[in-house]
Length: 191
Image (cartoon, rainbow, N blue to C red; front, top):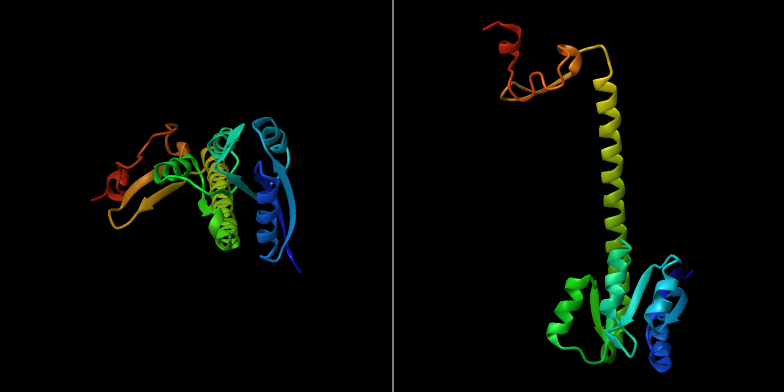
């Protein structure tokens, strides 16, 4: 069964769009493709979810750099692949710095499917990393709330230095008591 793939194609040439779509379909994708030719159409399309953006480098009324700027401004992590017949090395570097994930020459479209698959995998990895970081941050906030609002003393002791790097406010009513300064023997008064 073909993998569903929502493609936003930024391309002014109907012939090139047809070639690109045909190449993507060869990758065993169930392609839902929308073609836009200018900035207004691109911005309108941003209201929909996309798996990948494939963009010609320069169009008469829009550029891949413009698309990349909008994606960054909207904070959308959508794999973006620049496709062009002629692009200089400095233009390619500029596109990559602007956030393009890959570049494929129109004369070598056989690379397109591999680039899409790789970037979809990378995007999945980035999404999972963000989700894990968010879950960790949330767990830390819950833990901190519980620890700071309990009547019991809670502490964290680091080994091998035997240094408290956290002592809960319940220990003496001060939120900073003992952070990173006390040792077990120093805090208990024993030697």
